[in-house]
Length: 386
Image (cartoon, rainbow, N blue to C red; front, side, top):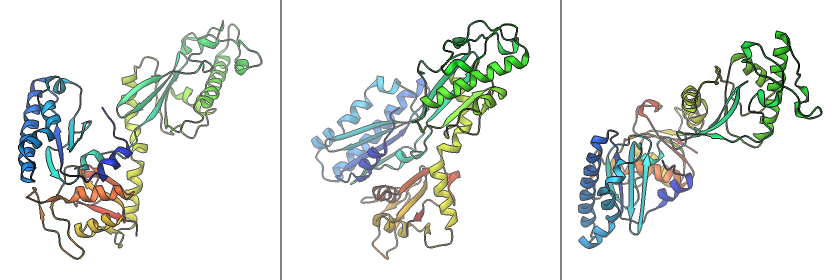
């Protein structure tokens, strides 16, 4: 699924060379319903064709304008591919963009002088990339996760991927699953690991502790210049052994205390995802804190007219609006009241989208969020810079 960069979002927000056609379509997940999506797109394109002609485009020009959309509409293989939850199609003269979305966007069509971009900002400020480090005496695995995709990373040769890898002939008790160890380099990184036969329980624990010390040291070197948050998966005692020697500030205090020995990457991911929210929503949470801190002051507003003016002037620091919420009308002049409609009428502009675009154009942060996450029950809220 294609992830939009902030540079791309900014470019789309600033595009004002209309007419611009913006189409959003929620996708059916059942194979038997894929044909319905093509029909919905056809109907939206038919409506867009009519609206473009009302704006003065001829029939030939209109057909060319919507050609990419018609190709997608008639492409059966397009509707059969991928697990996308939603689809976005943006068209302008000589320009087309299409995006798979990982959320169910409301169905909508906009024909205006700018692109309708609000749904593209849904959770765009969430940063859910992290490393998942799964360690046990049998294996060491490092995974990277971003936007729902997880992949195992290759470790450098100096990182021992199991206790057995740096071992020779020490027999562990059953609780350590019969691992062995020795030092290949008496003066090097492995020098602190003991070896021998018939170790006591205390000696076994010392041996394991020394191994995790070596592992922590080498992984810390490897990840030294990486700022990605790290979630550790390990049994309780081994968590303590590793954390005692691993000093990266990126290692999260929250951990998954279980042996990862028999767990595949998807099972590990399912365990990790509940911990992700603490850092993935950091930007949103900070903005919500600032909003609540300034409640009752002139820096907070839910008045549409005031927010539209402030967005155009570059005074909005953070904007909050629920996914799927929109009001249509004309952008009011200073001192005027906005006349709004729940559905677009001839000549109308999507007003909340206007606020989103102009907030982002001027370096502010528009948060398109679930209605339950809104700090107040309003269609639009803003925190001003001054």
